[in-house]
Length: 272
Image 1 (spheres, helix red, strand yellow):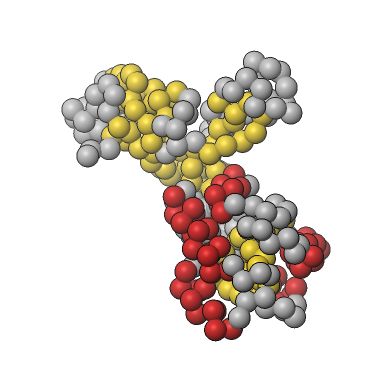
Image 2 (cartoon, helix red, strand yellow):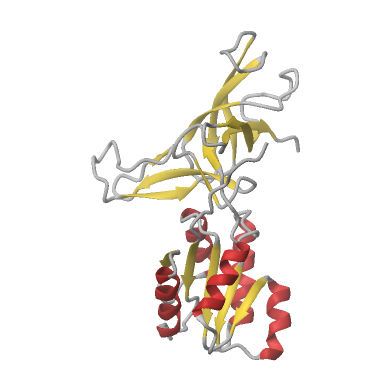
């Protein structure tokens, strides 16, 4: 059976990292990509590698574009790759543009850059390259607003945090139920690990679920909220105990009427 897949409009993050304040070239590229039909997130100047990496995940981008005009490209790439690795997002392609000596091309690619576009490069070249590496995204989550990621093999829990009251929520939501304000809440990535707060293993289960059937509450790490989750990979139940370390697992549940893969999140015990 042939499954029809619609081409996804690429989402591109354009950023300037460090003290490089030359932003005209980055803006020209950003506008050019938008004119070509792409979705572009422009962070502006003086960003940090960690902020760019996190924004790339939260905005669910396909490509990160870095403009470098002051010779810091090698250091920037090394630090950015490190931050992406921390977020399990090393598969997001990073392309560079700007004033980069040709003798640095090989080292820059070794550090993780997938392509380099020097001054004089045409927008058409960049557009064609991005289309060539953009993956088709054909997944949908069983719980809306709970997962985010560039492709099905690299999904993360998505929550929301209110800047006014400091509360964190899961799944993500558009407004804070405490403050009743949509202007104070923002989407954030939640930890993929946590501690098992409580659980139950039942000998009966709803239709479509295996028996025994386990579910519980997980206290996510990094000051995350307590969330409900189905549990998996727990064997006969002896692997589960209050306070044990749990890790996120993405499961495929079938396909919807549009042939998109339906995915869900589960938590499994981490044996150390």
